[in-house]
Image (cartoon, rainbow, N blue to C red):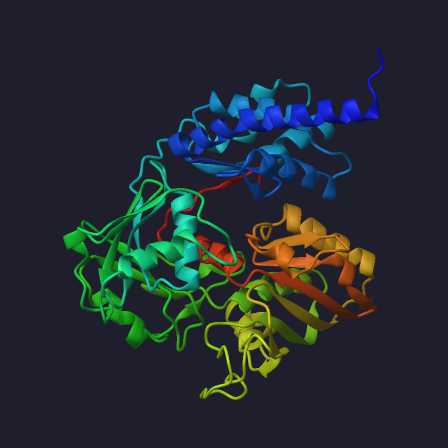
Length: 481
């Protein structure tokens, strides 16, 4: 009996669902018990749904000549569960595709192929204590960092969220903090369970026990009384930006390093992960993760400069409004920012273009920049106008950026889309520093205009977590390389 097209499709979909649902507990156990984070072409599958797993497989066709079926990747996931591996991020999509479609297996079994590809992870004693993390401030970035740290919690977590520090302490404060973590108008509900311990001033979320500490100054806390030692303090307040101010954190007992989630002043290193994170040294006590815009544009600029060379250029950011602006017209010390954020486009300054040079010195003095704040709550865009040293074509440039997004050391920072329908709300929750909109690319010989989307909240927070791993010296390899 010949099946109709409808029946064939339904059977195919059912097969995909079955495989995806079978993968989920394996992915979860690999992460919780072994510290193995599974991905498909850069898309992390930890805490994913069955539909997320199916969609991740579907994205493979964006980069390769053939699609990757779940029944093709499943044996690789199963084989990994039988291996004794050190913690790592393993892209089973890339491994499976290379084996099946690029003859990378060379006649070997799946097990022998994986033993060769993952050899550096085999039989390693990787027992290590997770680094304590304290979030100083619990605003937009602080709460997203909390979500990311809780999502990656468990016995093999490298970073362990131990506390948040806020001002206040009035009646009902703890419930309100927990509620803001539980519900988010932009990023949706928290994926899990949150309860409040009023007696001990703590928030419990998916196995994470988070002490809530009330303080008015960074130097007045004894973290050790909460069992917190050698902590990495992540300052999300934006109040202190120089060494003198941020150094106050180091006067608190139990604190050892400080990461600022904003551009720093003075000689503090401004790190854009993927570009200059190698500059983070063990002895560095205070580091900045730069700004969301600097993180969005610098990886793309590095990729372009490495291949074509950049003479000069201008970066215009079309940025969602922020909490610094007024909801309705009112006094503001900065020009124009006092006007109603949800009603106006507001021209303002950005230091992102100049800040690029701190992470990428070869572009010092070559870029100018400005910003337009627009009436959207999240997801921004950088319009990058460049004059290159080498002429190119739209096709060559887009192909290069697509390959960079897939295969280079910037694959966690740069994403690439060929959609003709994508708009800002589609990028909410993007884990990349920036997403190249290839359909908007303009090239005229040595003149180029690139459009780069970025989730200025979540994508930036993912970059911050990457810097945290390096500062805590608990980073792990990503395979295949």
